[in-house]
Structure formats: structure tokens, C-alpha cells
Image (cartoon, rainbow, N blue to C red; front, side):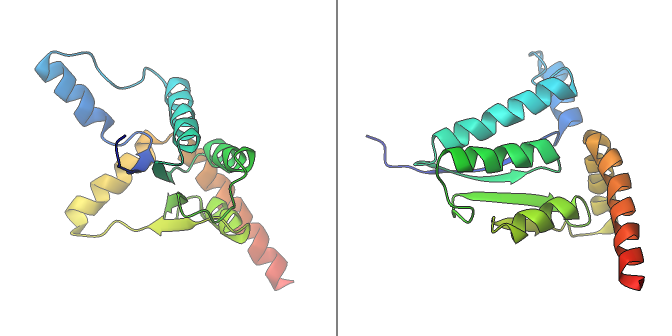
Length: 157
């Protein structure tokens, strides 16, 4: 019927403040989920929708959430998709969740690390928003530091 394909980059939390302000200014219901659990549930349902419609949808899942990454890998397995299927990519910000990126890449999944660039006055607010909007990053960053220390100790000896 329709001969089109959709490429989706799914992210969680981007532009939350701007969307809420716009909704208030324009007088429509705030489209932002009321809490992290609702956001996570919606994100994971979006992953399932994309994989259920993989014949017409390719996805880049930009997430630092361990469960969402595991869930996407599980969805691929349930749909008998190869780990390196070109329709599915995992992405994390460089320096965040590198353990997730490494393990996915080691298992043969398509992985991209994205790097914000530009003038410092534009990049720093972006990075601060990413940390503030993704409350799970704080716990993961601490865990990543612990893993790095453990690996350094292992390599020393």
C-alpha cells in the first residue's frame, strides 16, 4: 500500500522542560510523563512497537538505561533477529554507560557512541541536562567508577 520506511532515534527525557513550557504557553496538556516509571514503561513499549514493525522501522535506541538495553536485545532474540541486524542500533553518550556499550559491541550488536560538539556555552548545558534528566545516570556513573578502579587494580597486579 504505502511504500515508506521509518528511521527512529528514541531517546528518553530530551527537551522535557521545553515541552512542558510550550504546552503551558499554548494551552494544551503537558505531553511529559508524570514520573520516571511511566517514562520507562513508555520507552520500552516504543522499543517493542519498533521491533514488532521491523519490516518498516529501523531504530537507534539512545539509552543509558541498562534494562531498556537488555530488553531491546531480548526483543531482537524473540524475533529471531541477528545481533548485528542493520535495523537496530544501540547508542550512548561518550563517557556514559561505556560498560553497556562495550558489552553490547562485544556481543556483536551495532553500537554507536555519540559526541556532542560545538561551542562550550552550548555543549555544557546539553550535558548538564542529560545528567539531570536521566536520574539513573548518577547511580551508573558511580558504578562505572567502581568498575574502572577494579579493572585498574586488576591490571596492576
